[in-house]
Length: 130
Image (tube, rainbow, N blue to C red):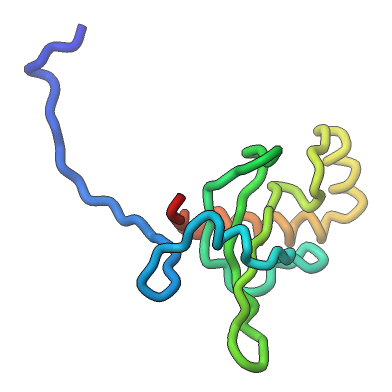
């Protein structure tokens, strides 16, 4: 049993990072208009990952991450993209046996992809307006 003498309320501060366009926070409708482009090439993460966006729509499930990233090597200005990233280098869920077979066939791909995926996990969650 919880006694009221044991309960306290603590005030804390959190940091929320939001994607903004000018003075306005990005909305889901605008986010969905960002061109979709893979952030990986041959298992290697390229470009600059800005962060993860926690939004799922339609038949989209929570077995992957949505990210916002930019390709900084454009002639004029960096371009902004979005991508869906899975915890493995293939876009469909694999059984443990299938993962092990594919990993044994191309261990370098799995290693570089895993490193890129961990980099993405370390990026902040970005908030958009709904």
